[in-house]
Length: 326
Ligand code: ZN
Image (cartoon, rainbow, N blue to C red; front, top):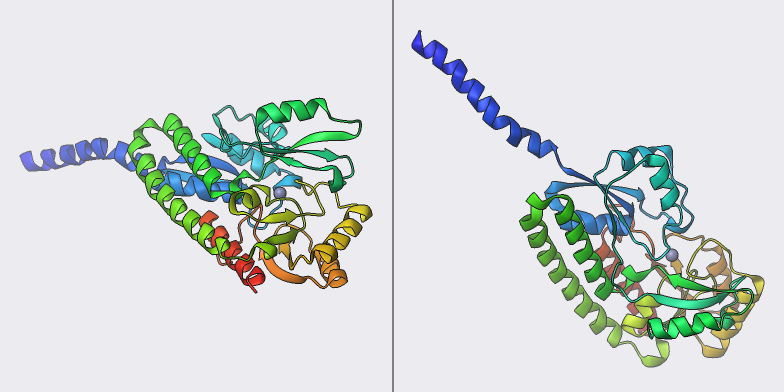
């Protein structure tokens, strides 16, 4: 009699005690990341505590993305939003408003030195000059802007691993603020990830450092490799500007074709997110070879050649060094 009464009480107590722990496993932080590269970084830092949904998926072009009703529902159900910033996700404000999302927004690029340039309307790159010197200079240049020109901020800061480290620290801080119980986990995941990024950074500099000086010039379709070029000593020329929103003008293309011929630029690269017909044509008309595909603004699908942020660097470096070393 005693035992029969006792057992149900033990079970009840165990259930009561067990319930919070059981619920906790299902109670992950729901994070939304605007694009696949950032989503991978959030996954690395968040580990098992965070469930990440990515809005612009593999091979997707975030510049011209049109959010879906499912995106609004995902965002509404999430606890925290991660964006690149620097004007990359022009569609995000409207999505945030329409979803009713009121949670914290982490701008992953916060703290990087933005690359800005004056871009003439119609993307005539002859008038464009990158200015990495800092804000004082930018301020000055803005005053010199002419009619039909606008100052553009280059959003592709993740293409420098030094900036990638800043992104990761911002992601860590954002997750700790949203989920203080996970602080130790996020810090440990971040330390491990930063170490892997530092190792890749050394490998990138070693590999690209071996390229002959006169071959360190490439063509990509849109200007996504500005931070990369500055960080690793590569000159990058692109018929389209820092966004894919407007197509290159006939004048831009003709100028690039002349430039490739005159400067004997060895290789043009297709991007995973953009149509490659223009580059096919440029390669045909100049005799420059197609050096392969670079992953610029999106990862490949999981079974592809660039499924993670660091995998993307490994793939791009391999493609660049193969095309440019001989
Ligand atoms: Zn881009």
